[in-house]
Length: 97
Image (cartoon, rainbow, N blue to C red):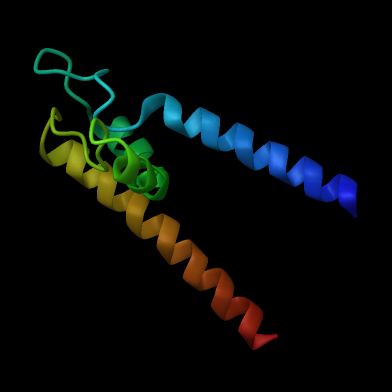
């Protein structure tokens, strides 16, 4: 049981370290290299992590300011809706059983 807890903690720490590598507002995107559709999807998936990071460091945000517009927004909202919608679908399936 203790091994599972340690392994789970290490996996969560590893995933969070990967997530923090490309959060919105980290300087990777600028006017000449705006974030596009796939960045929008990625930023939508890691929005909860970005929110927590933005609380402790004002440099980061949950939304990339330098983006391509409609395509970035579409990817961002698709990821947000599918991520949180998927959680709610999993909950309703477990309740039915």
